[in-house]
Every structure is written in C-alpha cells, then in structure tokens.
Length: 189
Ligand code: ADP
Image 1 (spheres, rainbow, N blue to C red):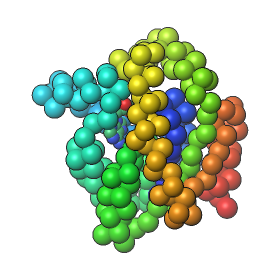
Image 2: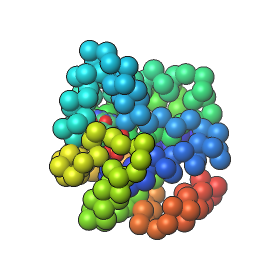
Image 3: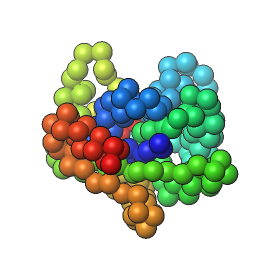
C-alpha cells in the first residue's frame, strides 16, 4: 500500500504518518526529516539546504526527486510507503507518477489533512516552544512564508490527484486519535 500524507505545514502529517507506519508496517518517508539529517551532517550540501529551509522556500525538485527515487526502490519500502512532505510541486507529483509507472507500482490514497490556517500558526508556535523539538524554520516569519509556498506551489497538486480519484479528505482539526481513526477507516475499507 502506497500513500501520500498531504496538507499544509503543521497539519499533523508527520504524526499521522508515524502512527500508520507502526500499525501497517509500511515505511514513512519524510523529506523534511531527510533534509534535516543532511543539514545536521554539516556537509556543503547541508549548509545550502539549511538556508533554503530557514527561509521557508522549497529545495530544488532535482535534489528531492533523486532522494525519493533512491528510497522507494529500497527493500524497506517493498510492502509500501507513506510519503510525508512529498510531492510538494506539480513537477514532483508528475515525476513520482513516472517513477511508480516504471516500477509497475501505483499510489493507493492521497490523504489530505484539512486545517484552518490561523490554527496552524498557533500549533507551530506551540511546537516552537517545546523543549528539544526546536526547528530553525518553526518561527512565525518562516511559517508565514511556508504557508504561502504551500498555497502557491503545493496546493495546485490537488486537482492532479482529484482527477485520478485518489483524494481522501479528512478534518485535520479533530483530535489526533480521531484523525488516526478516520485514516484507518480509509485504509481498512
Ligand atoms: P512542514 O512542517 O513545513 O511540512 P517539512 O519537515 O515537511 O515541514 O519540510 C521542511 C522544509 O524542507 C520545507 O520548508 C522545505 O524547505 C524542505 N522540503 C521538504 N520536503 C520538500 C520537497 N518535497 N520539496 C522541496 N522542499 C522540501
């Protein structure tokens, strides 16, 4: 089973992806976590990535597509995967479609967490305040740009998956366990 967790920054994609990974034994692939790993390693590439991420802008499609192509062909993705943070541009979505086609695989569901933008700002403020969880892009200024980038570059992917009959919309404002239950109902149907 191959899934995409879709939604604006702070919608809870990562939280839900982790729950699904544990229950269904399919691999969570978080591009944000992978990029933060590269930044932490202090390489030249990592330093370049950090300035892009801290500005709330998107890393180039080429870098991200190569990262994902390498991951989904690995054995740990054999039973399936949950994409968390990818695709983020229409070009990424199209390239993903090509990749899966070549592998004779397909996407099963695109789970969209629908949330209120004002509430997101509050959530990220809370996340910024949590000890040990500080992310250098979880400040208000960057968040406002991340939301703008989401609306301009990422939300336009939705019609692509709508046409393919893959969109499953969920109210992301519900408590975490209720969101999980709704996702499970879709996956178990
Ligand atoms: P968010 O909480 O905003 O969804 P992520 O952890 O998914 O955060 O991503 C953090 C940052 O990493 C993004 O703002 C962007 O700079 C970069 N990034 C992550 N995934 C992608 C992608 N698919 N394409 C381009 N940039 C990405």
